[in-house]
Image (cartoon, rainbow over all chains, first blue to last red; front, side, top):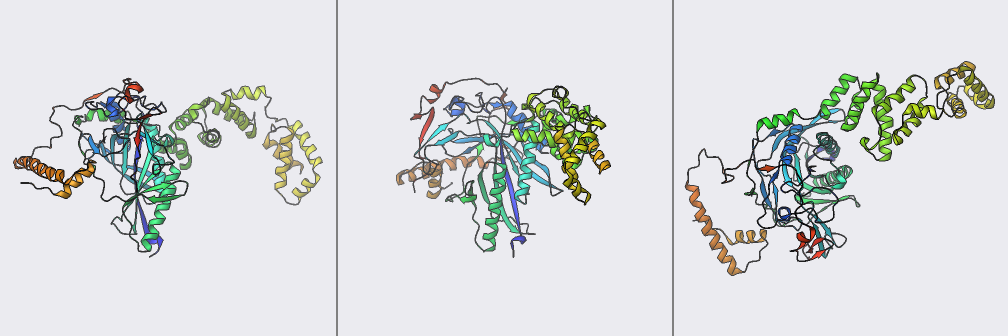
Length: 481
Length: 98
């Protein structure tokens, strides 16, 4: 048997921090970055006698997410206690959901190498976050003590668990990207992996291709970015395949992704499996979900990425690729819709947004809403180009200034005297000068070096500071050569 | 009569982070057996068609709106801490010594 004969099986557990104002079971603020232990109360400190009360928005967001992931919504649900001792968990149990998750049996569709793949979503459940530990040494292993900040304790999370349907690290990455997009469309979380509002653990096993029996899995933790997930799973996949082929036993264990060394490291295996002794939390009465409410939430769902991609292809005649890129962010997709309302050529708008807008956003590390850019800015620049007032080269410069300052592109063009030169006499004169100054290049061109023409056109652009009408310059050269 | 074993008592003690003397182990084995035996009475009741009881209270859907309210100052929050450092609860080394 060779590596190619082995199949990788991956399941992902994604924790998403919900962007509520207050915590899941008490009214402390969830704001990120506050001074340690300033957003705490008897409930999230786990003081004796304090009673939790559910934040209704947590339930609403969980239902909303369940619906967007094509899940069934439980009619009966409840909270359970997951019991374990750890210093970041003051009650010594986490409020979670065990056998009655709020949503179950859904799916997410992804596209892998042009092929549609459906990843099953086993369950979506609500739980609370733990506090934050700051270790006094380099790491937990050498620390002599640890400091506990409970501001995050009790912040609402949803955990989204897939079926073992994912077959490669690349599929895992695509699933995560899609999930993040959906959740951002819903507005239930900001999904910032670096602030920990989206976290991902994975189960991975290998088996001979064609086998329907699952192999022994390892659980991989501490992958703190999409890239880390991809790298961590790629490493673990290789490790297990090599072990399998060498006839070594794969032990069920938790493995830690070490980003700097690029490897997964086994944690000391415990004598026995964790025993969380789940039981219903007697402090939190059960939930009977009103189907009318669920339907109201469903009716309120935004246009989700898949639907939007399909509409962009159908309504605007965009290629699949454009539709995918433009819908990755809801803001960008909204922006595109608004631009198309103002401009007759959807593909030209798409090209401009994908090349210029996304390039500038990327370069600045900004989100669209953090810039002064409006749809009119884009369509005005396109119109200036269409009408031959400015060249494509100048358009990019003008747009970049608009991007930074929010100034009107027409104004910038007027003020900086950037109007394109389309005067045939004037350009003819410059073309003639360039020809005279570059006899060798002209010779090259006549000898069949087509590239030489590009150089000559470049010289005209240089002389006119980019303002020459490129089509006209091209034509003039061809006439004279 | 339900009988639980030493091994089970040791496991429960470990999960509860308790160290028991052999005397205590004997005592708890007996007590836990008695408690479970008593609870066995319930197993005799016919529960066909009765849905599992999650709560004895006749309450469902107890919730509140998503509004922030401050409660404790940091000084109050940390007042009962054994050791405080940098505004945090300080706890001893988490990992076991080798």
